[in-house]
Length: 308
Ligand code: SF4
Image (cartoon, rainbow, N blue to C red; front, side, top):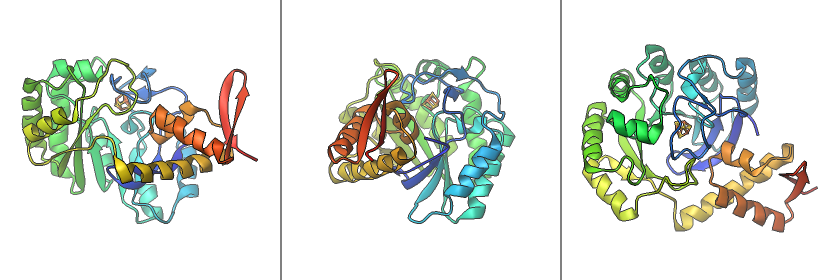
């Protein structure tokens, strides 16, 4: 499982080809969120650099694109993509190869830096996260690098909105009892009014989190929080019914494609597809039953491969 993954069905952006510009082995991020589905951060840093060889990333992009039937190409993955100082060049490379809109998912921690804003402004869609608007809640939910201040992030987001003419979807992840109290929602609302995003995606913990005590809000609590945050706030919880089965079918095809190239572990699939463990396991079981995938145990680790 490599730099380019998918296409994966994204509830928010449609059929998305993912690009991960960070090393797969050690999770690198500016934060260590309690709800992170990738697991705990191993390298917590705020320093932009070259964590993964740019030539490798360029080659992976050139091999993957152009490609039909994509709604979006999304820079996201196992950590914070703005940590790679060539992010702007990678976005430019994708745009030179196809007309598919480019999105970046970012945790906003470096958006106070003009060079990061310049890179992000090359995308068509930016989905920045802001889970808290007070320093205390920010530290509880996001467990940031010690130098990070949420006020600076908010000012960076306000500045970015003024410089960026594309779509801005602010993402707020609420964790029960951590950042969902009334005072925090009032502060988030005030920050969101200044940032003026096109929409606010309101999310809660629907995938197995880094810390097992990170609990979701109920649908009623989510609806109340959305009402509190105003008309731009839309809850984007777990897909249900037809949407969910369609997403599972897409996921099965993606996994079947991935195991053709080499043996992968459940962890590889969770990390690269952004899907939760029970879903990945359920889809793998179906694929084994259909004799499209087989399981091999090697050195005590289970790998999944193409059946033949
Ligand atoms: S949820 Fe995103 S921002 Fe938070 S630790 Fe995980 S990768 Fe980093």
